[in-house]
Length: 447
Image (tube, rainbow, N blue to C red; front, side):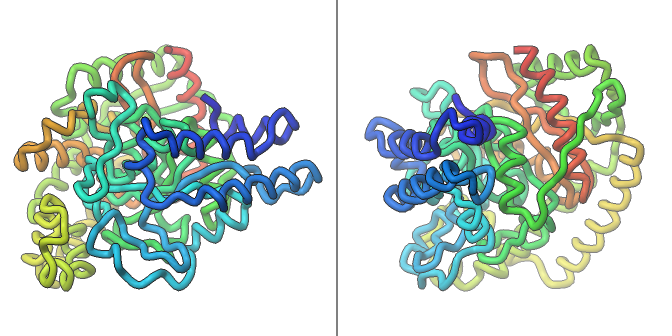
């Protein structure tokens, strides 16, 4: 496995050429026995290879456009690409008018010379943390693939594209965990930045108050490289000493219902951090309990998504994934007054939580409380909703907080993938990634 960071270093030192990485990615994507047909809704093979070859010439001339010039990345099917319909994993938009111009992040990738290999599959309209898509198929989780486990969502294709070598890193979105959940379930690293750092122009919305654009890769440095290209300004990382770290471990809700695999990996990760000298403080953070009542009727996401989907859901409901439609329709029961109350509650809640986290370098929690279930387990609608709520529970805290977070693999080799989430408040992205680098080293040593 070569990471985006390693590939960039190899090209910089003339040990490799970018086209070799793109050729390998395209080969994996087109393997008839692989997941490519369920991962990509559009594949840009010819253009990606040409881009990579042109980048190779720039690297030889010592004039690369960026550190990822010519390297293969993928984009989620929420981002506009000029002259193509942005379907968002749906049937409803399959015949929609083509986008007139690229999304901002697509232009930034092109300007950086990235070889965009294709648009990845996703939960329809990004409205689930499971990654299931009945229209285009669901990419199978790399762990115990023959058992057909979910990849996590909504950025399902993004995660499997990275895990299967169809790209070195992927750009996705994260409204309630849609980058971090699939990263955790597929054994990858997923970074959700502070939302305001990345321009969302040309990105199909789910909930404009909670949406953010994030990245999935194999490690922290690779996430940092890709984030630097698509963000308004790159982050500067610093060396962090874990003996100086003080992390909060919330005790309300986030540790409830952990399955055996997650509990074991979580406790091992904490023990490694304590051994490395980090101070871990159990923090009641009882304000987290308030989120349950705030979201009882669907919350901000349901209200805002209904504003966008009302016409389509009422005129053509059969075009929707029934599980997605059910969640969307909850928004029809919320009035503008309900929404205003929710916004006020969120603002007060955010201030309260930020105050309690003062003096901490971040908070730690399991990214999700259980490992990936099989697709068969989720055939039952009630089970689907229950597992979906579980998957979203911890990651969505950070979207409500308007903060930043990263999911790091913390499981032992050859066991079910489990994610450790490090999170912080708005604008603390550089410090968060710096601490994540230090934690990553400890977790890798543990394997």
